[in-house]
Length: 335
Image 1 (spheres, rainbow, N blue to C red):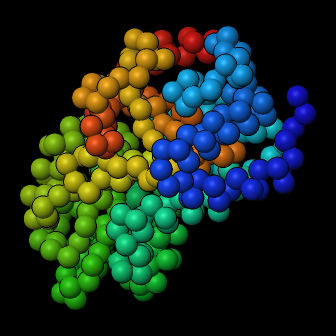
Image 2 (tube, helix red, strand yellow):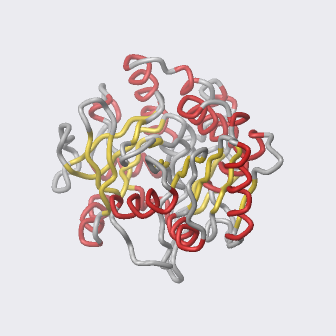
């Protein structure tokens, strides 16, 4: 199979953000499926391993989802494209991390800015403070990339990123409260807990958004307990969250209670843990599959290692992670 010409993909870059309903979503999803079935060597081999002919896939419900673990040791990318950016996942010492090859970083920027504006309004309305140690201490974090761009877009001189400067961050938060300035504090979980212990304070003008992740710094907490601690320390009515990952170019956002909503070009489905080709109805717990139409160049159809549950209105919850035996079972399909 000959590689795809980069010019042949250019017309697709705006398409995800014009999706305005199920018909447009399904049409683009099927177009991207056939594109990747033909030009993406990893996805093509995955389909061959399943014995699935691309021509037999006529509906979005029939599209197979690529196990996310393949990003760890494969170049998941349309053949013929050269990435200008790379996003890498975090990992403990000795683990193999994922790498997302991104030829069109402008698509990622448009994705997160568009979905942020739809959920929270213009970045210029906010002072944005990012408390992202661990992520900022390595290269290639897509979360840091997003945070830094939103900070720039806020145009606020006090917006910025912080490592372990909790005292300085607390001073900025107090100043924002005195000003009555609408502020977003985006933080990794363990650092937000550190801040809550060292500088509890009422934050009436601040939205706290946790991104998950203890990174081995603290014992894991269930979401309800984590949010209870943070709400109590900062006297806020809700804790917001962002659901994204290295292998995706889109995010879902939660404005409270761990309930996430996707932008129009992203959909989540819940698969049966024992039969990954069976989609579960609302209310059932299973593995999270994601269609991310912004993943034009890598793979729009990703089977994650997260457990979740859909709601009847299309929102979803993230309930945890697969254990190693379940992940191994999913990988056997590829092998």
